Image (tube, rainbow, N blue to C red; front, side, top):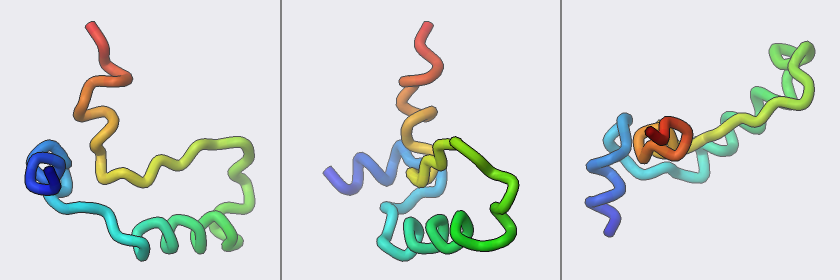
Length: 56
C-alpha cells in the first residue's frame, strides 16, 4: 500500500512528522503573520493528484 501511495505522490515519498512540524513552525512564525483562515494541506500533492479537486 505504501508503494502505491508513493507512486501517486508527486514528491515520490511518504510524508513524515517533520513535514507537518515544519508547516506548523512556519504558521507560528512571523513569516505567516498576514495569513488568516487558510488551509495548509501538507500531503506532498496527493489530494490534487487523486483528482478530488479536479473532478470532471
